[in-house]
Length: 403
Ligand code: AMP
Ligand code: MG
Figure (tube, rainbow, N blue to C red):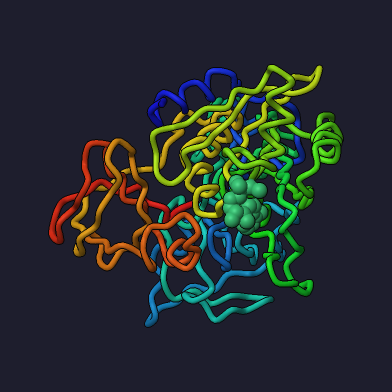
Protein backbone atom coordinates (compact mmCIF):
# COMPACT_ATOMS: atom_id res chain seq x y z
CA UNK A 1 0.00 0.00 0.00
CA UNK A 2 1.17 3.52 -0.77
CA UNK A 3 1.39 6.14 1.93
CA UNK A 4 -0.77 9.25 1.60
CA UNK A 5 2.30 11.34 0.74
CA UNK A 6 3.55 8.87 -1.88
CA UNK A 7 0.15 8.68 -3.54
CA UNK A 8 -0.28 12.47 -3.48
CA UNK A 9 3.16 12.92 -5.04
CA UNK A 10 2.16 10.50 -7.78
CA UNK A 11 -1.08 12.36 -8.48
CA UNK A 12 0.64 15.76 -8.48
CA UNK A 13 3.43 14.55 -10.77
CA UNK A 14 1.04 14.64 -13.73
CA UNK A 15 -0.49 18.02 -12.93
CA UNK A 16 0.75 21.38 -14.20
CA UNK A 17 -0.31 24.98 -13.72
CA UNK A 18 -3.10 25.92 -16.14
CA UNK A 19 -1.95 28.06 -19.07
CA UNK A 20 -2.58 31.75 -18.43
CA UNK A 21 -5.14 33.84 -20.29
CA UNK A 22 -6.66 37.29 -20.10
CA UNK A 23 -9.81 37.52 -18.01
CA UNK A 24 -12.06 40.49 -17.26
CA UNK A 25 -11.18 41.99 -13.88
CA UNK A 26 -14.33 40.70 -12.18
CA UNK A 27 -13.56 37.12 -13.28
CA UNK A 28 -9.92 37.41 -12.24
CA UNK A 29 -10.90 37.57 -8.58
CA UNK A 30 -9.57 34.41 -6.90
CA UNK A 31 -7.08 33.71 -9.70
CA UNK A 32 -3.30 33.88 -9.55
CA UNK A 33 -1.59 36.60 -11.54
CA UNK A 34 0.60 35.30 -14.37
CA UNK A 35 2.72 38.41 -14.97
CA UNK A 36 3.73 41.57 -13.14
CA UNK A 37 1.29 44.46 -13.37
CA UNK A 38 2.75 47.97 -13.72
CA UNK A 39 0.71 51.09 -13.26
CA UNK A 40 0.48 53.16 -16.46
CA UNK A 41 -0.06 56.30 -14.39
CA UNK A 42 0.80 57.66 -10.96
CA UNK A 43 -1.55 57.21 -8.01
CA UNK A 44 -2.97 59.63 -7.17
CA UNK A 45 -2.85 60.81 -10.77
CA UNK A 46 -3.24 64.48 -9.77
CA UNK A 47 -2.98 66.59 -6.63
CA UNK A 48 -6.42 66.44 -5.02
CA UNK A 49 -8.25 67.38 -1.87
CA UNK A 50 -8.59 64.89 0.99
CA UNK A 51 -11.39 66.93 2.59
CA UNK A 52 -14.49 68.86 1.68
CA UNK A 53 -13.44 72.48 2.20
CA UNK A 54 -11.74 75.41 0.50
CA UNK A 55 -8.59 75.49 -1.60
CA UNK A 56 -6.63 78.55 -0.43
CA UNK A 57 -3.24 80.16 -0.29
CA UNK A 58 -1.89 79.07 3.07
CA UNK A 59 -0.32 82.47 3.78
CA UNK A 60 -3.76 84.14 3.43
CA UNK A 61 -5.18 82.17 6.35
CA UNK A 62 -2.09 81.88 8.55
CA UNK A 63 -3.45 84.35 11.13
CA UNK A 64 -7.05 83.06 11.14
CA UNK A 65 -8.58 82.31 14.52
CA UNK A 66 -12.07 82.10 15.97
CA UNK A 67 -11.60 85.53 17.54
CA UNK A 68 -10.08 87.02 14.38
CA UNK A 69 -11.29 85.06 11.33
CA UNK A 70 -10.22 85.68 7.73
CA UNK A 71 -12.76 86.28 4.99
CA UNK A 72 -12.05 85.14 1.39
CA UNK A 73 -14.03 85.52 -1.85
CA UNK A 74 -15.20 82.16 -3.22
CA UNK A 75 -14.43 82.24 -6.96
CA UNK A 76 -15.43 78.71 -7.96
CA UNK A 77 -16.87 75.41 -6.78
CA UNK A 78 -15.30 72.03 -7.74
CA UNK A 79 -17.00 68.72 -7.04
CA UNK A 80 -15.05 65.46 -7.54
CA UNK A 81 -14.88 64.69 -11.25
CA UNK A 82 -14.51 68.34 -12.32
CA UNK A 83 -11.62 70.73 -12.45
CA UNK A 84 -11.57 74.47 -11.85
CA UNK A 85 -10.39 76.77 -14.62
CA UNK A 86 -9.87 79.55 -12.06
CA UNK A 87 -6.54 80.37 -10.42
CA UNK A 88 -6.60 81.04 -6.70
CA UNK A 89 -4.98 84.45 -6.01
CA UNK A 90 -4.52 86.19 -2.68
CA UNK A 91 -7.89 86.98 -1.09
CA UNK A 92 -9.76 84.22 -2.92
CA UNK A 93 -10.67 80.56 -2.37
CA UNK A 94 -12.26 77.74 -4.40
CA UNK A 95 -14.85 75.58 -2.67
CA UNK A 96 -13.62 72.02 -3.18
CA UNK A 97 -14.92 68.51 -2.47
CA UNK A 98 -12.93 65.39 -1.53
CA UNK A 99 -11.16 63.96 -4.58
CA UNK A 100 -11.43 67.10 -6.73
CA UNK A 101 -8.20 68.43 -8.31
CA UNK A 102 -6.45 71.27 -6.44
CA UNK A 103 -6.89 74.44 -8.53
CA UNK A 104 -3.87 76.39 -9.75
CA UNK A 105 -2.53 78.87 -7.22
CA UNK A 106 -3.81 77.07 -4.11
CA UNK A 107 -1.34 75.38 -1.76
CA UNK A 108 -3.61 74.14 1.04
CA UNK A 109 -7.16 73.05 1.81
CA UNK A 110 -9.10 74.37 4.80
CA UNK A 111 -11.70 71.77 5.86
CA UNK A 112 -15.29 73.02 5.82
CA UNK A 113 -15.49 72.39 9.59
CA UNK A 114 -13.11 75.35 10.15
CA UNK A 115 -15.33 77.74 8.16
CA UNK A 116 -18.86 79.14 7.98
CA UNK A 117 -19.39 77.05 4.79
CA UNK A 118 -20.09 80.22 2.77
CA UNK A 119 -20.59 80.05 -0.99
CA UNK A 120 -19.92 83.71 -2.03
CA UNK A 121 -17.48 84.54 0.71
CA UNK A 122 -16.12 82.15 3.27
CA UNK A 123 -15.16 83.01 6.84
CA UNK A 124 -12.22 80.92 8.02
CA UNK A 125 -11.54 80.52 11.73
CA UNK A 126 -8.39 78.37 11.63
CA UNK A 127 -5.50 78.29 9.17
CA UNK A 128 -3.89 75.44 7.23
CA UNK A 129 -0.21 74.68 6.64
CA UNK A 130 1.19 74.55 3.11
CA UNK A 131 0.15 71.20 1.68
CA UNK A 132 -2.55 70.58 4.30
CA UNK A 133 -5.27 68.15 3.13
CA UNK A 134 -3.67 67.78 -0.29
CA UNK A 135 -3.07 64.23 -1.54
CA UNK A 136 -0.05 64.60 -3.78
CA UNK A 137 0.20 63.03 -7.23
CA UNK A 138 2.33 59.84 -7.16
CA UNK A 139 2.65 59.73 -3.37
CA UNK A 140 1.11 56.24 -3.46
CA UNK A 141 2.45 54.77 -6.74
CA UNK A 142 4.72 56.32 -9.38
CA UNK A 143 4.04 55.83 -13.10
CA UNK A 144 5.50 52.53 -14.29
CA UNK A 145 5.77 51.06 -10.79
CA UNK A 146 4.98 47.34 -10.40
CA UNK A 147 1.91 47.21 -8.16
CA UNK A 148 1.41 43.41 -8.14
CA UNK A 149 3.89 40.68 -9.01
CA UNK A 150 3.52 37.45 -10.97
CA UNK A 151 2.16 34.75 -8.66
CA UNK A 152 0.00 37.02 -6.49
CA UNK A 153 -3.37 35.61 -5.52
CA UNK A 154 -6.00 38.18 -6.48
CA UNK A 155 -8.28 38.82 -3.53
CA UNK A 156 -10.51 41.80 -2.86
CA UNK A 157 -7.64 44.10 -1.92
CA UNK A 158 -5.69 43.20 -5.05
CA UNK A 159 -8.79 43.69 -7.23
CA UNK A 160 -8.93 47.25 -5.89
CA UNK A 161 -5.46 48.22 -7.09
CA UNK A 162 -5.92 46.45 -10.44
CA UNK A 163 -9.03 48.58 -10.96
CA UNK A 164 -7.19 51.71 -9.81
CA UNK A 165 -4.44 51.18 -12.40
CA UNK A 166 -6.99 50.50 -15.13
CA UNK A 167 -6.50 46.73 -15.58
CA UNK A 168 -9.83 45.90 -17.18
CA UNK A 169 -8.30 42.63 -18.40
CA UNK A 170 -5.93 40.67 -16.21
CA UNK A 171 -3.46 37.96 -17.29
CA UNK A 172 -4.04 35.09 -14.87
CA UNK A 173 -4.05 31.33 -14.46
CA UNK A 174 -7.76 30.53 -14.78
CA UNK A 175 -9.82 28.59 -12.28
CA UNK A 176 -9.74 24.88 -13.11
CA UNK A 177 -13.01 23.65 -14.63
CA UNK A 178 -13.99 20.42 -12.91
CA UNK A 179 -16.68 17.90 -13.84
CA UNK A 180 -17.94 15.91 -10.87
CA UNK A 181 -19.52 12.59 -11.87
CA UNK A 182 -21.23 10.66 -9.10
CA UNK A 183 -21.96 7.00 -9.74
CA UNK A 184 -24.28 4.52 -8.06
CA UNK A 185 -27.62 2.98 -8.98
CA UNK A 186 -28.85 3.79 -5.47
CA UNK A 187 -28.47 7.55 -5.91
CA UNK A 188 -31.40 9.95 -6.19
CA UNK A 189 -31.42 13.69 -6.75
CA UNK A 190 -31.91 15.36 -3.35
CA UNK A 191 -35.53 16.45 -2.94
CA UNK A 192 -37.00 13.61 -5.02
CA UNK A 193 -38.84 10.79 -3.23
CA UNK A 194 -36.72 7.89 -1.96
CA UNK A 195 -37.81 4.26 -2.28
CA UNK A 196 -36.43 1.89 0.36
CA UNK A 197 -32.78 1.17 -0.46
CA UNK A 198 -32.17 4.43 -2.28
CA UNK A 199 -30.24 7.40 -0.90
CA UNK A 200 -29.70 11.01 -1.85
CA UNK A 201 -26.63 11.78 -3.93
CA UNK A 202 -24.53 13.68 -1.39
CA UNK A 203 -21.13 13.39 -2.98
CA UNK A 204 -21.64 15.33 -6.17
CA UNK A 205 -22.89 18.28 -4.13
CA UNK A 206 -20.17 17.82 -1.53
CA UNK A 207 -17.41 17.67 -4.14
CA UNK A 208 -18.67 20.58 -6.22
CA UNK A 209 -18.85 22.69 -3.07
CA UNK A 210 -15.38 21.56 -1.96
CA UNK A 211 -13.96 22.33 -5.44
CA UNK A 212 -15.48 25.80 -5.34
CA UNK A 213 -14.11 26.42 -1.87
CA UNK A 214 -10.71 25.37 -3.23
CA UNK A 215 -11.01 27.99 -5.99
CA UNK A 216 -12.22 25.90 -8.95
CA UNK A 217 -15.31 26.16 -11.16
CA UNK A 218 -17.07 22.84 -10.72
CA UNK A 219 -20.30 21.37 -11.99
CA UNK A 220 -22.27 18.18 -11.42
CA UNK A 221 -22.83 15.35 -13.86
CA UNK A 222 -25.12 12.54 -12.84
CA UNK A 223 -25.78 10.65 -10.73
CA UNK A 224 -24.90 7.93 -13.25
CA UNK A 225 -26.22 4.41 -12.66
CA UNK A 226 -23.72 1.54 -12.33
CA UNK A 227 -23.70 0.76 -16.04
CA UNK A 228 -20.44 0.61 -17.98
CA UNK A 229 -21.68 2.17 -21.21
CA UNK A 230 -23.48 5.00 -19.46
CA UNK A 231 -20.51 5.78 -17.28
CA UNK A 232 -18.08 5.79 -20.21
CA UNK A 233 -20.40 8.06 -22.17
CA UNK A 234 -20.65 10.46 -19.21
CA UNK A 235 -16.85 10.65 -18.99
CA UNK A 236 -16.41 11.13 -22.74
CA UNK A 237 -18.98 13.92 -22.74
CA UNK A 238 -16.83 15.92 -20.34
CA UNK A 239 -13.47 15.61 -22.07
CA UNK A 240 -13.71 18.84 -24.08
CA UNK A 241 -15.15 20.88 -21.27
CA UNK A 242 -12.97 20.50 -18.27
CA UNK A 243 -9.45 20.50 -16.86
CA UNK A 244 -10.14 17.71 -14.38
CA UNK A 245 -12.74 14.98 -13.92
CA UNK A 246 -13.67 13.74 -10.47
CA UNK A 247 -15.73 10.63 -10.00
CA UNK A 248 -17.28 9.30 -6.83
CA UNK A 249 -18.05 5.66 -6.05
CA UNK A 250 -17.38 2.41 -7.82
CA UNK A 251 -13.68 1.99 -7.09
CA UNK A 252 -13.59 -0.72 -4.42
CA UNK A 253 -13.92 -4.50 -4.67
CA UNK A 254 -17.68 -4.75 -5.27
CA UNK A 255 -19.30 -6.57 -8.19
CA UNK A 256 -20.72 -3.35 -9.62
CA UNK A 257 -17.72 -1.11 -9.20
CA UNK A 258 -18.18 0.35 -12.66
CA UNK A 259 -15.69 3.19 -12.45
CA UNK A 260 -12.80 0.84 -11.76
CA UNK A 261 -13.92 -1.70 -14.36
CA UNK A 262 -14.34 0.83 -17.17
CA UNK A 263 -11.31 2.98 -16.50
CA UNK A 264 -8.96 0.04 -15.81
CA UNK A 265 -9.58 -1.09 -19.38
CA UNK A 266 -8.27 2.19 -20.78
CA UNK A 267 -4.84 1.49 -19.33
CA UNK A 268 -4.26 5.13 -18.44
CA UNK A 269 -5.85 5.14 -15.00
CA UNK A 270 -4.19 3.41 -12.05
CA UNK A 271 -6.15 1.99 -9.14
CA UNK A 272 -4.46 1.39 -5.86
CA UNK A 273 -4.89 1.21 -2.11
CA UNK A 274 -3.58 3.99 0.05
CA UNK A 275 -2.75 3.34 3.69
CA UNK A 276 -5.29 5.79 5.04
CA UNK A 277 -8.58 5.80 6.88
CA UNK A 278 -11.05 6.63 5.58
CA UNK A 279 -10.43 6.55 1.82
CA UNK A 280 -8.33 3.47 1.09
CA UNK A 281 -9.36 2.72 -2.54
CA UNK A 282 -8.09 5.41 -4.91
CA UNK A 283 -7.49 5.90 -8.61
CA UNK A 284 -5.99 8.56 -10.83
CA UNK A 285 -4.77 8.95 -14.38
CA UNK A 286 -5.69 10.55 -17.70
CA UNK A 287 -8.53 9.99 -20.16
CA UNK A 288 -9.14 10.71 -23.85
CA UNK A 289 -6.89 12.14 -26.55
CA UNK A 290 -6.94 15.34 -24.53
CA UNK A 291 -5.35 13.42 -21.64
CA UNK A 292 -7.69 15.06 -19.16
CA UNK A 293 -6.63 14.25 -15.59
CA UNK A 294 -9.13 12.12 -13.71
CA UNK A 295 -9.25 11.32 -10.00
CA UNK A 296 -11.62 8.60 -8.84
CA UNK A 297 -12.79 9.02 -5.27
CA UNK A 298 -14.40 6.36 -3.09
CA UNK A 299 -18.17 6.49 -2.60
CA UNK A 300 -18.61 6.73 1.13
CA UNK A 301 -19.19 10.44 1.64
CA UNK A 302 -16.63 10.86 4.40
CA UNK A 303 -14.05 8.90 2.39
CA UNK A 304 -14.84 11.04 -0.61
CA UNK A 305 -14.31 14.25 1.35
CA UNK A 306 -11.11 13.11 3.08
CA UNK A 307 -9.73 11.93 -0.28
CA UNK A 308 -10.63 15.30 -1.75
CA UNK A 309 -8.74 17.03 1.03
CA UNK A 310 -5.73 14.75 0.72
CA UNK A 311 -5.39 14.60 -3.07
CA UNK A 312 -7.76 16.84 -5.02
CA UNK A 313 -7.41 20.12 -3.17
CA UNK A 314 -3.62 20.11 -3.72
CA UNK A 315 -4.21 19.35 -7.42
CA UNK A 316 -6.61 22.29 -7.72
CA UNK A 317 -4.15 24.58 -6.00
CA UNK A 318 -1.32 23.44 -8.29
CA UNK A 319 -3.50 24.07 -11.37
CA UNK A 320 -4.35 27.53 -10.09
CA UNK A 321 -0.67 28.41 -9.84
CA UNK A 322 -0.46 28.37 -6.06
CA UNK A 323 2.62 26.89 -4.45
CA UNK A 324 1.35 26.19 -0.92
CA UNK A 325 -0.69 23.12 -1.71
CA UNK A 326 -1.52 21.72 1.72
CA UNK A 327 -3.76 22.82 4.56
CA UNK A 328 -2.15 24.70 7.41
CA UNK A 329 -1.34 22.39 10.33
CA UNK A 330 -1.77 23.24 14.00
CA UNK A 331 -0.59 21.47 17.14
CA UNK A 332 -3.45 21.30 19.65
CA UNK A 333 -4.71 19.19 22.55
CA UNK A 334 -7.26 16.45 21.91
CA UNK A 335 -9.61 16.55 24.90
CA UNK A 336 -11.16 13.10 24.37
CA UNK A 337 -9.66 9.68 23.69
CA UNK A 338 -9.70 8.17 20.23
CA UNK A 339 -8.58 4.92 18.57
CA UNK A 340 -7.07 4.56 15.14
CA UNK A 341 -6.47 1.52 12.89
CA UNK A 342 -2.92 0.15 12.87
CA UNK A 343 -0.95 0.71 9.68
CA UNK A 344 -3.19 3.45 8.33
CA UNK A 345 -2.88 7.19 8.63
CA UNK A 346 -6.22 8.36 9.96
CA UNK A 347 -7.84 11.71 9.36
CA UNK A 348 -10.28 11.89 12.24
CA UNK A 349 -13.06 14.43 12.09
CA UNK A 350 -12.85 16.87 14.98
CA UNK A 351 -14.02 20.25 16.05
CA UNK A 352 -12.27 23.07 17.84
CA UNK A 353 -13.51 23.67 21.37
CA UNK A 354 -10.95 26.43 21.96
CA UNK A 355 -8.17 27.92 19.83
CA UNK A 356 -5.81 25.21 21.16
CA UNK A 357 -8.06 22.18 21.70
CA UNK A 358 -10.27 19.83 19.69
CA UNK A 359 -12.66 16.95 20.38
CA UNK A 360 -13.68 14.19 17.96
CA UNK A 361 -16.80 15.15 16.05
CA UNK A 362 -19.88 12.91 15.65
CA UNK A 363 -20.79 9.32 16.41
CA UNK A 364 -17.50 7.54 15.74
CA UNK A 365 -15.17 7.73 12.80
CA UNK A 366 -17.06 5.50 10.31
CA UNK A 367 -16.82 6.59 6.71
CA UNK A 368 -20.61 6.97 6.50
CA UNK A 369 -20.90 9.29 9.55
CA UNK A 370 -22.01 12.48 7.87
CA UNK A 371 -23.20 14.22 11.01
CA UNK A 372 -19.66 14.13 12.34
CA UNK A 373 -18.36 15.47 9.05
CA UNK A 374 -20.84 18.33 9.08
CA UNK A 375 -19.80 19.24 12.63
CA UNK A 376 -16.07 19.12 11.91
CA UNK A 377 -13.75 22.06 11.36
CA UNK A 378 -10.50 20.13 11.81
CA UNK A 379 -9.00 16.77 10.87
CA UNK A 380 -6.76 15.08 13.41
CA UNK A 381 -3.84 13.70 11.42
CA UNK A 382 -2.98 10.43 13.21
CA UNK A 383 0.20 8.71 11.97
CA UNK A 384 -0.04 5.13 10.71
CA UNK A 385 1.82 3.68 13.70
CA UNK A 386 -0.38 5.37 16.34
CA UNK A 387 -3.39 3.32 17.42
CA UNK A 388 -4.74 5.35 20.29
CA UNK A 389 -4.87 8.88 21.54
CA UNK A 390 -5.55 9.59 25.19
CA UNK A 391 -7.55 12.56 26.42
CA UNK A 392 -5.09 15.43 26.85
CA UNK A 393 -2.61 14.20 24.21
CA UNK A 394 -1.09 16.67 21.78
CA UNK A 395 -2.13 16.08 18.17
CA UNK A 396 -1.56 17.62 14.75
CA UNK A 397 -4.70 18.88 13.04
CA UNK A 398 -5.43 20.16 9.58
CA UNK A 399 -7.32 23.40 10.01
CA UNK A 400 -10.46 23.38 7.84
CA UNK A 401 -11.81 26.72 9.07
CA UNK A 402 -10.55 28.75 6.11
CA UNK A 403 -11.36 27.60 2.59
P1 AMP B 1 -19.11 2.59 -3.57
O1 AMP B 1 -17.78 3.24 -3.44
O2 AMP B 1 -19.77 2.92 -4.87
O3 AMP B 1 -19.04 1.13 -3.30
O4 AMP B 1 -20.01 3.23 -2.45
C1 AMP B 1 -19.70 3.07 -1.09
C2 AMP B 1 -20.81 3.59 -0.21
O5 AMP B 1 -20.97 4.97 -0.46
C3 AMP B 1 -22.17 2.97 -0.49
O6 AMP B 1 -22.85 2.87 0.75
C4 AMP B 1 -22.85 3.98 -1.38
O7 AMP B 1 -24.24 3.93 -1.31
C5 AMP B 1 -22.31 5.26 -0.84
N1 AMP B 1 -22.29 6.30 -1.86
C6 AMP B 1 -21.73 6.15 -3.09
N2 AMP B 1 -21.90 7.28 -3.81
C7 AMP B 1 -22.56 8.14 -3.03
C8 AMP B 1 -23.04 9.46 -3.21
N3 AMP B 1 -22.83 10.12 -4.36
N4 AMP B 1 -23.69 10.06 -2.20
C9 AMP B 1 -23.88 9.40 -1.03
N5 AMP B 1 -23.45 8.16 -0.80
C10 AMP B 1 -22.81 7.52 -1.79
MG1 MG C 1 -21.31 2.31 -5.87
